[in-house]
Image (tube, rainbow, N blue to C red; front, side, top):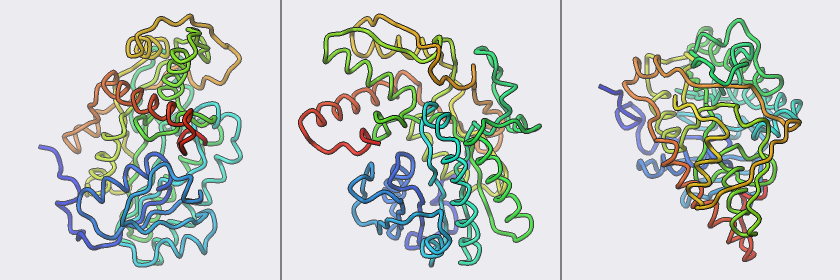
Length: 348
């Protein structure tokens, strides 16, 4: 039997929930999720100006604050019962390979925010980690075995982004061990879906390749450039599974200060992904391969043994189903942008 989501815990509907990074993809989805659960006091925070937030949720306190600064974190944590830290400077592989310093600087956010949470007497603190924290030596083959939680050590995380995530996980664990604050740590595996970044340099593979397919249909030029040789493999988690998983992990007593994979275990190659885009778009694309482009590790998949044993649940949206919804949403965004309408997630 699976553990129950947030409604089964002691938190009340009028307790204050703070979501850092709420102007982005996952943070915005989580804000909407909690409001739909009936929570009436939500504080959403992002450093982007409000008009650039990917989605705004009516009735939510929305603040523009750069949480790399201590004073802003103290303001964010005031009166909070729970804090969800999804704030980070990140994007797809093209971004995190090019801007390693910016990715590393996100450690300031978690360092200052978790201290502010502790000082404010917050009950629970969630940190959004990443599969980039895993040892890269285990990810050199497209036919990679699925990564289990213990594979983060011996440590050899991805430069920049991965090391920031691994170190911030340790902060959470030590705040629990030394100071008794409940913390939750989820290692995300490639989250995708509607309302996510789809253009501008920060987009990930499902959105980027969907956009390229849409551009090919629109232009009539049925060609596509693929980063790498197309044999790289990943698992991709649909956004609805992600926010449900965050809720369940945050409120599981068994997972206090314990990193856990949050991802699908459906392994997909980039070539397969392009084939799915072709099927959805109803076209055949002439493929070219940019072997000099950023491509990340050769293969990465999520071992879900631990999350299934602990929660009786795992992300389960089939990739083709989620991709079809994502493609349809990006197609509408593409048309909106052509019509001169604002598309914040396409302008990152």
